[in-house]
Length: 161
Ligand code: SF4
Ligand code: SF4
Image 1 (cartoon, rainbow, N blue to C red):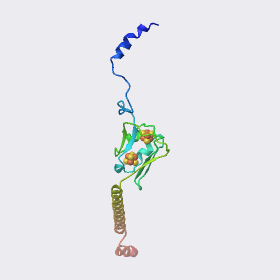
Image 2 (cartoon, helix red, strand yellow; image 1 turned 90 degrees about the vertical axis):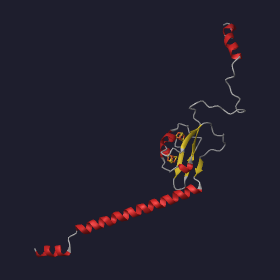
Image 3 (cartoon, rainbow, N blue to C red; image 1 turned 120 degrees about the vertical axis):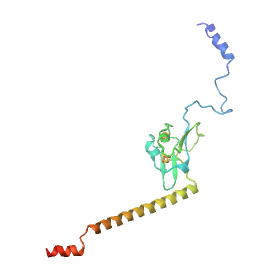
């Protein structure tokens, strides 16, 4: 095989910029559509658990009352299902990879104190509304029962017959 066969290509490459980058001395360039890692806008999370149920690796967990969301990045395969399923669109596939770590285990994100307080107030209001609706329904049912029951006069007339 002749070396001359490759000479034109070799000559062309002499005048082209290198295809490699100088990472880590220059920022890494990720190709379009590259899957990086999952991030969350934790204050927007409603703790519905859709992401947890859709994750094929079982790497997510959420605690609605505590306002926390956790991910074990060692188990995540960056499939993006959780991002697709999140009804609040608070999960994002971010370009770039995580800094390498030496410790296994989940990373937990916690809502800000302000958001936790807002959530607590919203829960209390919801509970009050539910209790009021229940009381109103009970009162309406009692009213209907009373209206359906025969009066004292009607009962006496019925006895005479
Ligand atoms: S990207 Fe896929 S594997 Fe990773 S947490 Fe989301 S659903 Fe699970
Ligand atoms: S699907 Fe979205 S809103 Fe629901 S728990 Fe997961 S991150 Fe939170």
